[in-house]
Length: 183
Image 1: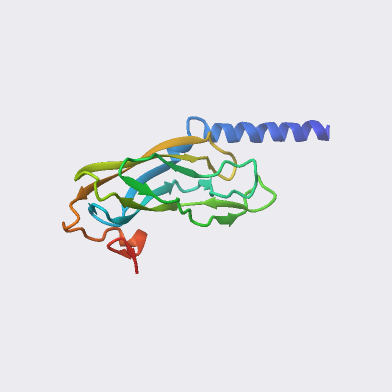
Image 2: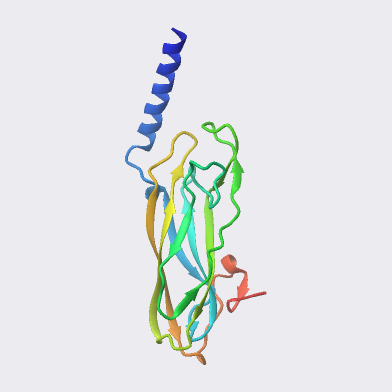
């Protein structure tokens, strides 16, 4: 009898979790937008770029280095762009949070995570519009269930100007930089 009761409670919990998540995917609770450390990129210049990941309240995504091997990490893979050299993506440190479904705290991102990388434009990169593209893999969860993992296309558009043209710092709240160089 007790075993049947436990099984019924477990089945009810799974159904409730599935109903909560029904119709949602990780991409429906995670949005992204690009950011650059400068308003224009000079030919031959180094700059900082980022993908800002906003996570709907009540949800989290696993950090780059999840606490458990079965969890799907957040990963940003950048496509190669002729004339631009991108450095390694720097991920924020995850927050250790305890959830009802896990015996130990998990390393997660909640609210907002900023994934940054340095890049250098070739001196011969054509003046005009360009974009760094990539794919962001995430799995969003709440405290009861995880949604299907999703790979989201990301794009970081930028304008290239001549090396002697004017370029101004941008997004200081994200980069804490002046003109793309660390203070």
